[in-house]
Image 1 (cartoon, rainbow, N blue to C red):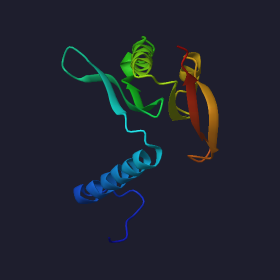
Image 2 (tube, rainbow, N blue to C red):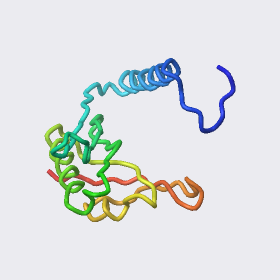
Image 3 (cartoon, one colour):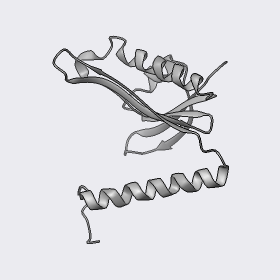
Length: 143
């Protein structure tokens, strides 16, 4: 591959290779652990015009439900939409026998929101991005 600048976007062919790398790691993880049960989770809300208002994407594997993305459109924030999506993820996680929810967020995003919902910070990467931190959070699920 040719040299790239930091802000370049991958081509479709390169994105397919990147996805292949992730798929191979996933296969290796399953082979190594023997844990093959993997379920994806997607919950979305649309407005009356069919526009995306909010959504949550994640998956469960190995007793953990990982929330990869939780997004709420600015005009819908602070109206309970994100909380409702988190509750739906927690219900789904419990239904599939998960013992915890986990996610990462930056200090400039929504750590206080997650902490209000019972998440605790279990790790941090300082200065990512510079002047902020990336946080690893989890919420233990009680049966």
